[in-house]
Image (cartoon, rainbow, N blue to C red):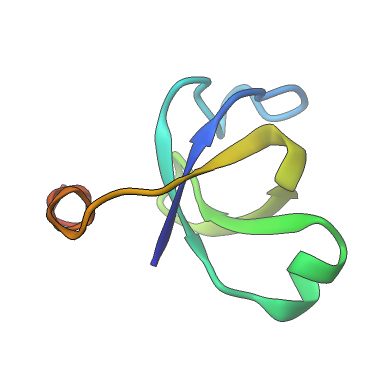
Length: 69
């Protein structure tokens, strides 16, 4: 599981919060199209432009803590 920080929610203000950490699901086709499949505020996974996020490199303990939320 990879984690990303939202840096821009243009076009999706109800679904994404700037400054919030989101989990992204791996998807090869999305990556080719510069998209990320993110679990958003609805709890569902949707495709968003990858430019709206920056990937976070976290230690395993931090990943575990985020997964427990």
